[in-house]
Image (cartoon, rainbow, N blue to C red; front, top):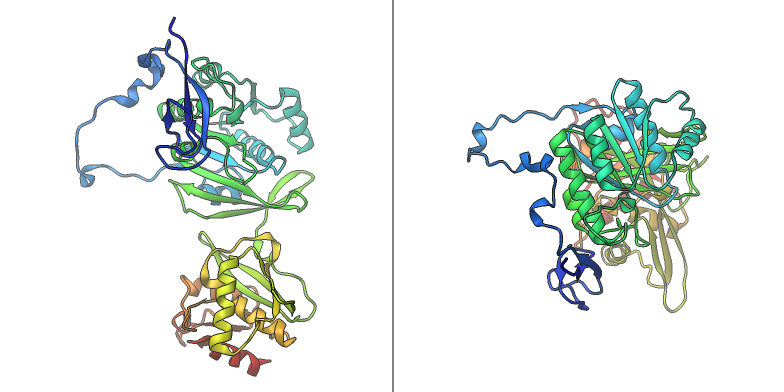
Length: 462
């Protein structure tokens, strides 16, 4: 028998090197090579079982116009918020990777989804590698899933899991978690780069060949990224991230990648005694319940995927020392420094000797530039010590020249604000609706072209 050969695999790109290097020769990332074992005694032709050989059949070259393109059939999970993130439901042969911090609710949500699918007549399978079957049963009873017929398999060996999938042929199977699964073809420990990549590849091929939808639960690193090689995210069809503070009852599920739906779509859940429940009006989470308007608070409408959300932006401006601080939570800190410079240069609002703190309420992260106008108005409001008008919203990107640029899908943002009872809006001129449009009755819309014009208008409204 040939001796096993040690190789080094990159955590980021999955590339290999025969010796350890400080920098990956493929992606040039530093300190990402991890030791693993290449099996010299395993014939390459038997690396994948015969059940996957049908995937490698040669097909004729054809044009796109001649291919019969049909929409993928979707099976609803019974949870509207989860279906929104998935693009309408689970897809036959789809592979979903879901990650999040320990204890945030990944297993709870998936167990609830499997129970709903099973009660709808679908065959389901829950493969647990971290808990025993008794622990899963206790959780189901705690969630109120009495009499659930979800099939459970406590197993971590890949070959046995594949044999069970081939025998049972479920509609959907959950692997909790991919880091605990190992293959006999490799001698490295479960959770190693080689094992995670190999097991995920086998399970992906099994899903495509049999039509089973497979959900892989992945651990995350201290930085919040999915553990294992980066190639794992390229291998699957959908990547979901669980977000939220374990001390808060609200959770966000965000689609980072989705071949069957919109990217950056989010689902909002509330953790209750009976598990995770979808939140039908998530804007209420991100809006503080002030009895009266307070200085330094401005509401904006942001887009998360296809969903408009109202988020409160809070700013606090206080006298600072020789080196004033600029801190932001949920917003880009570098962009905050740029907005302060624009505010000084074009609107005459100076904060060079002030500490400036900006926060997006509710733990939401806003990455789009449409928050610029709301941030600047909140800062000016805090500095003046005077609150913005009641029922006030604003959105728009602000450029370095002081111009207010339009935000995408501005009409949908305004309709959401009008639906929730807001009465005054300052928006970019290009986002202002036509006067004949009656969809915004009750909402007075002021269109502006420059930041100084917006500040002057706010002073007149106050």
